[in-house]
Each structure stands twice: as C-alpha cells, then as structure tokens.
Length: 251
Image (spheres, helix red, strand yellow):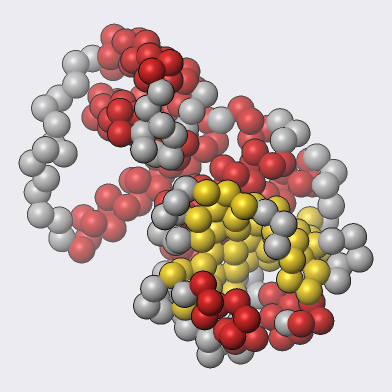
C-alpha cells in the first residue's frame, strides 16, 4: 500500500529533512502515516507530484539516494535512525490541522496509527470510560498487519479489578510479560492468549484530575522489554489526547 506515496516522503526527507516532510504533509493534507496505508490512487499520486514540484524548487535537487546503498548500522546509529524516524512522524502528526478540530474519531485514528509505527506494536488502541465508569469502551483499535480500524469492544471493571486498580496508580503500566504481571495477568486467558498478545504498555488518560480512559499498546509475539523511550512516547501521546479532550470538553 502507498508505495509511491511513501516514495514521495523519502524524497522530501532527502531534499530537506523535517521541514520538507512537514511541508509535503501540509500541502497534501496526508501524513506519512496515512501514506503508508493508503492506496496509490491516481488522483492522490497527482496531488503528491504537484506538491513535490514546489518542494524540489524550494529545497533544491535531491542528492543521490543513500537508501539504495545503505551502510551497515551500529546499534548506536540504529537508535539514532529510529529517533529521527519518530521525530519525522511526530512532525507530520502535529502538522495536521485536523488535530486541532473537534473531530475526536479522526484524532483517535491518527494516534493509534502513529503509535503502531513509533512503538512498533501490532495493536494500538484508545479506550474511554462509559458514563458510570463501570467499564472502558474501545473508541479505536488499529491493527498494523492489516491496517484496519475497529471499535466498540468493552472491558468491565468488575471483571478485571486488579487491572483497573493498578492503572489508576501508574504513570505507565509496562508489562513485559503481561501473563504474569500483577496488573495485567487477569487478561491472560480471556483476552491475551486468544489474540497472541504477550506484552502490554498502557497509559492512563487524565483530564482535570479525573482518569477518563486508557491508551493501550499490545505486542503480538515473544514477550518484549519496553524501553524508557517507548514509555515516554506513549505518555506524550496520552497527554495529547488529554489536552484535546479537555479543550473540547469531552471529559
């Protein structure tokens, strides 16, 4: 999906780094995250091509691509490359005007897509409390492997009391092995095992001193150790959601 669109973003990065990528995002109204999951429809490709004409003029001729002959990366340079990638993704995200509009569903879409790429998880989701705080309801779940969004699942607090008690007391709940972590082990049989999930990284969403929901990251595959950087990214995006919800009086 989006091979040509992603190619435009690679070219913009080579031409002018973050400023060029951000301009491409603004001109096309499509972020690099969206470009990775959208089809290369002719009208969309044409829009990108037109935008790239302006970007080439502004930022100059593209240098010979280093992507065709990548140098072996040390662990340090790999981390630096990952950090650059995340910075680019965040720049694209914050350049989107929809972030500042009253469209919560679209924001949830973009946040889950963004986190699936930045934190490298199969499943990223936003859950908000129902009216009486007896359960959290999934407002958006993005699955990376099939680029699909779903919503509507519900988790009742009475069914998972330890989790709901724990998440309220943690800045981030990082369960490297979610089957044995005290805060997430209740999910093992009914939720984690059927979906192949072995690690969870959850962050509470607080608005005006009240917990209103959870930002959830679920890793499918062998258990993994969450890094401090991953926890910080998750915490940052939970605060973005909280700010949006407070501004739009969603709490």
